Image 1: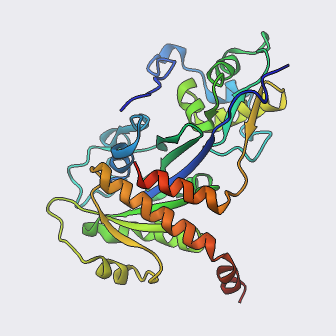
Image 2: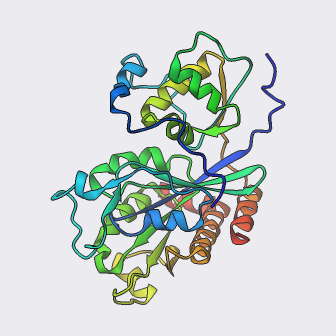
Image 3: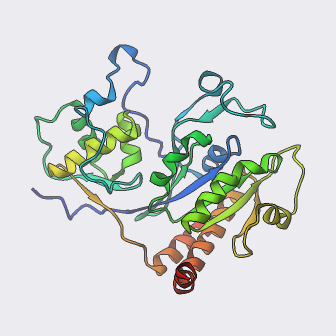
Length: 118
Length: 199
């Protein structure tokens, strides 16, 4: 076991609990519908200093390409909230996301060979 | 603005691990993941007393109430993620989100409660998504021949059924390898499948 990335927040701070709909401004649907759990998102350019707390945190986490699921975990927000915030940031040009198309057969074989060699 | 193209963006692919409550999905993921399966488990005594049936798996004290996942770096450019579906039937509406874009699915089975895997098998068959059935060996459970399990579930001869030990890394690796063989087999013969579906 290595490479574990700890949560960046303390999850047990009841006093600081913020309702998820406050963070997203009451929205539950992301602007982009095609974000998957494993979609990689990465920060682009210089972070906008006016970003609010969670959004700034997400951009910082995405300094390296990071999956949507890992962003939710590390920022400590529910997955649905993470999707809304990430899609906002993609639309605002703060993040870029890459969604692989259907993988070609040689790539599947490469993955299979790597798995067999684990 | 720079940096959009000069960062190496790796490929992230996912495999879904499904099956009934307490069948060993989190154990399976933890056996091979390079990170601890992320801590989305809550004590079952707190969240689901009287809600979730645990007949036959009385020793289980925690269960997955949100999704959990593990990661395997296959090479510097490919990361494989394993996502476990929530064990309880009442969370099955989350499956669409989990399954979209997945390479394939491992359905874990406990032969003491074989019926628990019915919803998962039904779901992945109806999606036409590639899956393998992995019979998790539990201490004290009767052993069944994999062909008996296949027959009990009415699975086609083309769906791989294999035994595994979800605690054992090599065993988990072999299941994932069998799934990738299945994924490649389904992909290599797409025309036949499409023709069968449109008939």
